[in-house]
Picture 1 (spheres, rainbow, N blue to C red):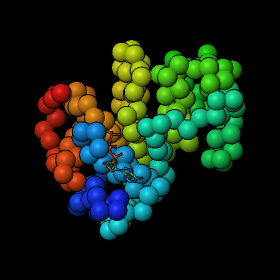
Picture 2: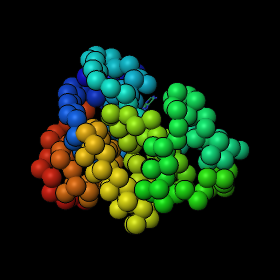
Picture 3: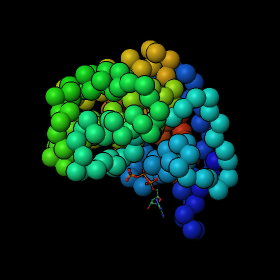
Picture 4: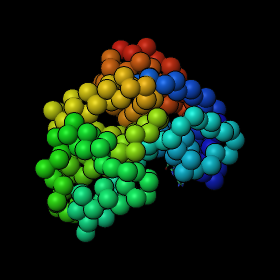
Length: 197
Ligand SMILES: Nc1ncnc2c1ncn2[C@@H]1O[C@H](COP(=O)(O)OP(=O)(O)OP(=O)(O)O)[C@@H](O)[C@H]1O
């Protein structure tokens, strides 16, 4: 697929396939077009050329959390439960448990730390148990333990047959991934999964 903003070509022929049960990563420098690609994959942005086909729902975790500071964590969950048409919050509770975040249920989003806001952001993207997870810098602001728990969760989701795509400007998680691409010059380069900075 191709995409430009005005005369600035950002994606110049990206071809990407995500199989079920795969944990994949895309790295690239600031401004390389990672967020643009995720927005296209999630359907939020229409590419100039190309198309996206998928079998199953997406969970898109954007880089900037879309939270209402006046609402509590639980009110966010209730709101998204209705929006997703869910019967219960079982999956949300699992994710919160995995990220050690359950005790914040009654805190207002505006009072949460950056890393805790990001836990809520992730929970909202995963709580309808989508088949395809598109995660933009999902562990920003996480401390080391939470970072490890995030990967445990990602690996568990892969084990359940979900496709997990993690986008980051850092590549030091390479050894955990089945596939790693570098987005550079508007195209994806497949990389061997050896750690790089
Ligand atoms: N809505 C927009 N209008 C115009 N230009 C944009 C828009 N969104 C992004 N761009 C430009 O497109 C390029 C790619 O941006 P994008 O956000 O996709 O990069 P990124 O790889 O996600 O960067 P980062 O690591 O900094 O988040 C940048 O040069 C950016 O300035």
